[in-house]
Image 1 (cartoon, rainbow, N blue to C red):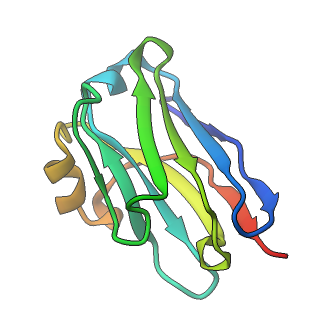
Image 2 (cartoon, rainbow, N blue to C red; image 1 turned 90 degrees about the horizontal axis):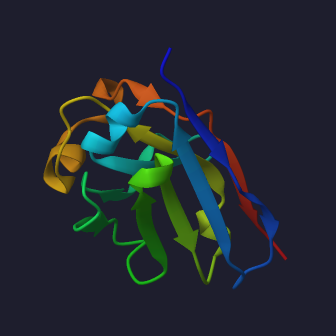
Length: 129
């Protein structure tokens, strides 16, 4: 069974940085766009960032733009989310995601989260003083 395994996250103060990692159990996902969502308590899953299959194109939500950086290393079957200048409103469970057939960032953004089939287990990020 294909899995996405996440690591990173934790409790940090406002202004701090964190790096999330997500590793796929199959090299198949090197062929597809990958991305990150987050879900705060009482809210739906919110798109954060996505990267195309080759790592040459990225796209961010307005809240992530300028502070977060998504990257990937296909040799390691992994995608990363570097989060800088974290704010309390960034507090959420963060999920990596991908699906067969999603090649570009446009494909990824155009797919509703309910229609994405492969998810990481989620990682809690808490930003608090």
